[in-house]
Image 1 (cartoon, helix red, strand yellow):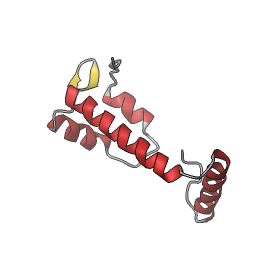
Image 2 (tube, rainbow, N blue to C red):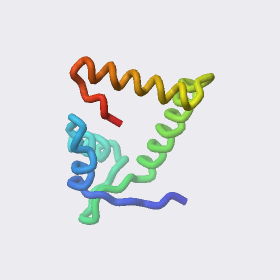
Image 3 (cartoon, rainbow, N blue to C red):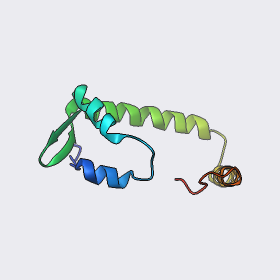
Amino acid sequence: MTTTRQYSREQLDDQHADFDTDFHTAYDDLASRDWLTETTNGLTLTEAGEAGRLRAHDRNAKVHATMRKGIDDAECAATIDVLRRVVANLGGNGDLP
């Protein structure tokens, strides 16, 4: 059984402040597809929204496993470190998660 967590738009905005994304448009889109409901307690995924989240999680796990095939943790960490330095060298934020 999944534990339902409710967050307000403001809490989610604070958590995602570093991203240049209009999350209110995303919330409204999810609500228009009946994936998200909003009450005075906050935003909650509907059953359809939770099913979509689980599908996305499964797809992401498969892609991640395919991407990492034959690459150990040390090699992956070294690659990410080099790519962060490349981004920083080009004037970007190399500290992004």
